[in-house]
Amino acid sequence: MRAFSSIIDELETAVQNRSDGQRVEILRQVTDLFLGGANQFGHEQIALFGGVLEQLTQRLEASVLAELSAKLAPVENAPEAVIQKLARHDEITVAGPVLSQSARLSESDLVEIAKTKGQGHLGAISERARLAAVVTDVLVERNNEVLNKLTRNQGASFSNTGYDTLAKRAETDDQLAENLGMRMDVPPQLLQALVIKASEDVRRRLLASAPPASQVIIRQKLNQVAGKVLRDAGMPRDYRRAEALIAKLHADNKLNEAALVGFAEAGQYEEMVAALAKLCGAPVDLIVGVIQNLRYDGVLVACKSADLHWPTFCAILNKRFPQAPSAQEMEQARTDFLKLSGATAKRMFRFWMVRGTANPETRR
Image (cartoon, rainbow, N blue to C red; front, side, top):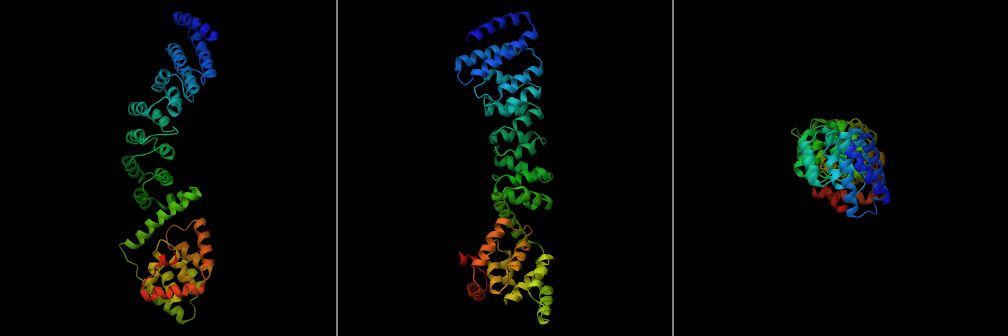
């Protein structure tokens, strides 16, 4: 510590003479000396460095303090008093590095700063690797400007109140809605409400950008909502016209797999259901239950029992809900399709016909 003692002497002279140039130079020397041995210093040595740095940082320009902040921010045992001072500086260039990185700031420190400082400070806090709900509650309550950055931070936790507030704001902010949909810690009921109100473009981007493992979960929840929308829609579907059309095609020997695929790909939902029912020899009501079930088992059995092929099954799966299945889901569906024999499917379907309902649980 001989070098440090020499710097202490220069420090006293610099402070007395009020030489800004000397103070800046000594500040850099002390900072570098501290950084060089930070991992080995004990509490007393850190406190000593902290006292020196506090004296040196008095009345210095923001650019110099910003340099110090950037150097100390990632250091776990940086002098606490110095970090506290830098974090509360009005200039975001000074406060930003420690607000976004320093482990020396407690949750109560962050809450205090979030309540009293401006948008720049809130934005820096929102970048921290870990954020407790008590902190994000303040960030969510105080502003609209950093919420997109905050909700993209997977290390941030949110309370139920925080999520409720975010969901309301997401109703008029597509980017915020997309960010929330990408978070796997969003409460299921909130995600469902979010998906109902999200635009088709948001849903499409969400499914395109989600990690493969997350896509399965997101699609399941989207399909749960979609299925509920189909079941609870204010206007029940009327299949009478579609049944009449299918009956005519059948009488003219024009009802086949190609026709069924054509209805599916054209988005003619009622015709698709009626055509599958006729090819299976089943009531439309039974096929409606099969199609709207969240699992594809019933559709699989219906198609196999009617000796339909994979492209037909695939077309129906892609069109029965607003959101098409993921590549992983389709691969599993193909595996199941190839595994199930036509004879087994026919026995299962006859059983369903006797019962008057399709129960895919019998396959598991």
